Structures are given as structure tokens and as C-alpha cells.
Length: 301
Image 1 (cartoon, one colour):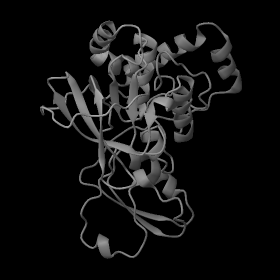
Image 2 (cartoon, one colour):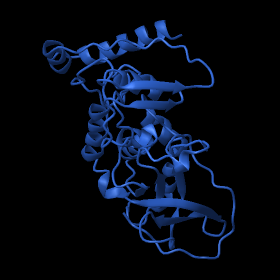
Image 3 (cartoon, helix red, strand yellow):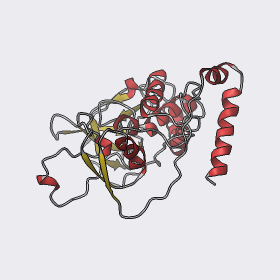
């Protein structure tokens, strides 16, 4: 990983970036957008990895991990840097640790097609398993050595003379001093919900009780025997509200603008025998994943 000193005299232009990749064929989707750029860069640079142009990936969530894997495996390209504002990879499954946090897409479909996992414990995997899966991929493909943690990308300008972006980054802790790195391609895979939104509720600033966003759940708060107010009824609330109601003596009052009608899928555990079959019998795991896809499509056309 190389960070090259920047030239401060640049010609500004609008930053172009690829679409954020999330799951399924995410690695392929993220890399295809920059694939032709990377292949062209590699042919111009020759065989020396130190001289090959640099690619910056913004965000170390699912899209960033998948993009890094795809650059390595599909394009044999290794001169890239992932800038992650937090201290760990994992994105949404690192941050959302609220009670009941889990995927609402079948586990065997909510994974990379090139990295199937026979060891999912349930049909809708919980947050700890999902985070462990994505971090295991980051370790497997040695993405940590490409990652700069606790660092945000704050701006980028196009230098027409160099045909590169000057990318400005700043450390999350330690002040607002900016430094710059150069990149021929910039891939933005920041999550659309990476920054929790807290509505401006009158009186919230003077409320003396604990209050927090579900994406920053305070596990030190004991809700047993308390009245809990929930604002919103999105996918997260659909998972943690039932958990709150199972706490002894907890009363829940939920405010929402519109009713959210949904049919939450039932969760079933995978038996050790089934997991053994998926892990050991040739093609069983891939055929099962295809079956999961077909069933999911049939119920959610």
C-alpha cells in the first residue's frame, strides 16, 4: 500500500464513483464499474506493482470488502487502499448490534456467490454470524493490509495534467488536518444509512433519561420494567421491538407516520446433519443456494 505525496495545484471536477455494492454478486458489481479502468491502467504500467496506478475505495463495509476481493481475484490488481472511518471493517453488521439484529434475506443468498458458507446456523442469520462471515473474507483475502482505519475521505479533485484524482483524507481522531493521496480511480461504496439520523424532537435535548439511535444501541441500558418509546417502524424496529416486548415488565409505545405492513419470514435452525451435507456433499451447497433463490423469488416476485 503506497500513499504518494500530492500536488496541491489541481483542476477541480465532480467526483465520479461506482454504485455501492451490497451483497449477492456485490464484488462483481463493484469491480465491473472500474474494471476497464483498472485493466487499462495495468497495461500502461507494466508488470511492476509499485508503478501500477493506485485505486482508492471509500468505505470498508460489505461493498468495500467485496470490491477489494474482486479487484484481487478477477483483475489480479493489488495496488488499492480502502479508507474506513471506523476502527474495524464490516459496515452495517459492525454498527447494528441492537437486539434481534439479523438479515431479512435468506442467509445462503445473503453471501457472495464465490464464497458460499455451509455453516449458517439459521435461515436468517443473526448479526454476529454475518459480521464474522464478512470479516473472515477480509482476512482470507488479506484486505487489512490495504486498509487505513479511522480515516475519512472528505474530498477529491481531478488533476487533468496527471489524469488522476487527488483524494483528501482526514483522521477521525486527531484534528481536521488533511493530507492527500493520488488515485487513478475512486470507488465509493459508502452505505446510504451509514450516518444515523436523529429527528429534531422538541424536548429531546432536555430529556434526562437514556436515548439513542438503534444503529448505536446502548447495551448498558436495562429496559426491564421501563416504558420505552420507539420512533419509527422500519426494518430495524420490526426486529428489536418484539425483543423489547419480551423483556419483563417493559412497556413499548411506538410512533410512526404510516403503517408498515409486512410479513416477517419465520426463522428455522439448520441441523448439524444438514450443515454437514452442505459442507461435504459435492454441489449440494450451490444447488441449495439456487433453490433458496427460486423460493425467495416465488414469494417476493
